[in-house]
Length: 102
Figure 1: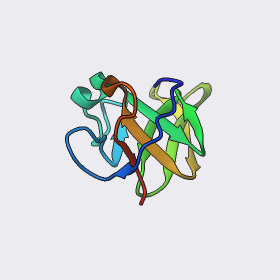
Figure 2: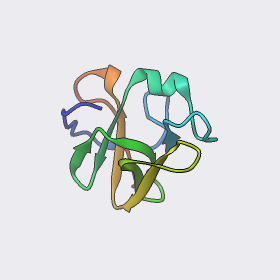
Figure 3: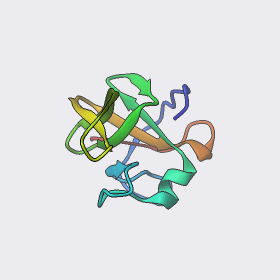
Figure 4: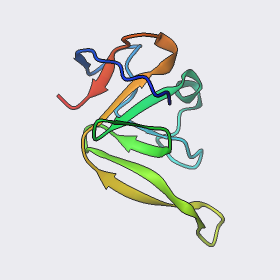
């Protein structure tokens, strides 16, 4: 998740557009290692975030880790933050297609 801020028209689907919902936790049904390997950039509330654990563009939220706190199973505790979310693949270079709520 890079500090670059691509400015392009919104895209909703296609091979170069990230999924609507994605998680970095392998236990999640929204985990997809192949897509994560490409590198996903996230902009939340007009700020590029590098600490996102999970996101949903259509529902307008991201989950971020709550410090170093873990639950009784050793999994990090997360906070759900709501607001506009945009995602793009970082391996596409300058001006990649950006997935955001239309």
